[in-house]
Length: 162
Image 1 (spheres, rainbow, N blue to C red):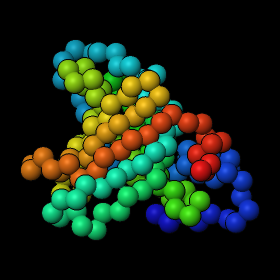
Image 2 (image 1 turned 180 degrees about the horizontal axis):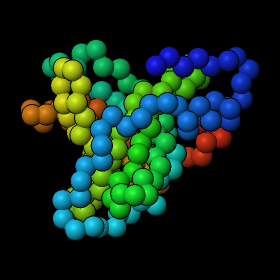
Image 3 (image 1 turned 90 degrees about the vertical axis):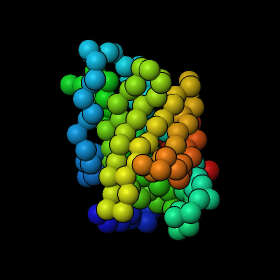
């Protein structure tokens, strides 16, 4: 999908694009393994901005560090699932990247999402501590961490602030 931004658009108008860009989560939410467990959705739902840094491992040479924005929304029909729409900021423009469902894992206190790409598969794991989000992207089956994310909660009108 290609997204174009019109010069002179306010940051609020660009953020509407972030909220509504067309990418749908790429996989169905993971089923709840044991009985229904209410997840701490309020802790993760919202807008997050931070860095997604590449690790220097074999096979990850073309990876680039990014400033990222995550828009996390509730999936009301799933007790332990949220939808995350990811975008990156390049030259003060918001570029949508992907959307995934994340499921809360009470045993680890993490929100996880498995993904499959043509060349590889892996899992994102996010941890929330107040207004700080940290996480990793790990390739499977070799369990090689390829990205580290650190973000803080923000508001839509502040996403493009430096």
